[in-house]
Image (tube, rainbow, N blue to C red; front, side):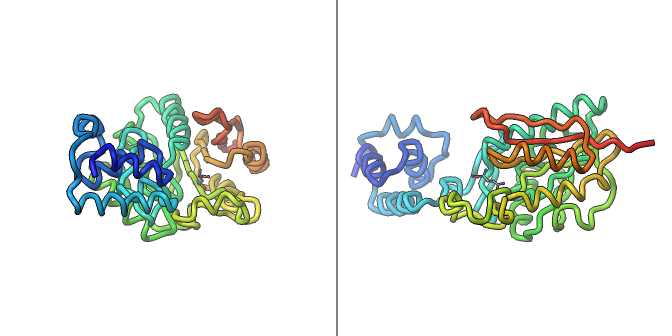
Length: 278
Ligand code: GLN
């Protein structure tokens, strides 16, 4: 079987061409950035072992396992993150939340040394992206899953980024106040049929009660006690949840409540500013 034939076999299994190329590079033990190598070697024969490995990887992808788990990494905000089934795969949509957080930090703090906490950090994606962009920021992150924290700590170590991780359910037991609280919590309704397509990822990172708002509600309730006056809470949420999340924020007393759109033009994050009175 040649490289060209292997790619054709993968697309026949229903794989996207790009996924097939990346899995073929994986089977060859080559870097994911090496797609040009495949083009230059399209008539090369695959050794037996690589051929078997490649077809096995293709089967996993065809059964719905995210490509990121199979290759073991995912790019997020320019960072190469290790990911596996212990954590949700970082989505490009979440970069909207990071961009908003960085804008707010620039406006709020001349020294760009804000105190930031990321709740339900998973792979550490948001916390690490913020720390990378704002080296002087104090960045903390929590997760209820000890397994997720192992992945996040490993990512921080490999990227040499000084983020402090701790096990906590959202803000419970956290001390001090922050300029910025950010989170991409679970927000899919527990009975949403969409969950079936996400079956390889941790359910605890995806589903949140009958309307998907249970964890967002908890965070909005906890956050005021952990924000400095003028500090912001930013939350990612589902494609149709922006009005409900804005309402929760306003009802809790947040000011300047607003939403931001993701790359697909969907209102994907909402946030508000906390002002202490008097
Ligand atoms: N954006 C993910 C999806 O629906 C869900 C992530 C989350 O619940 N935080 O595919």
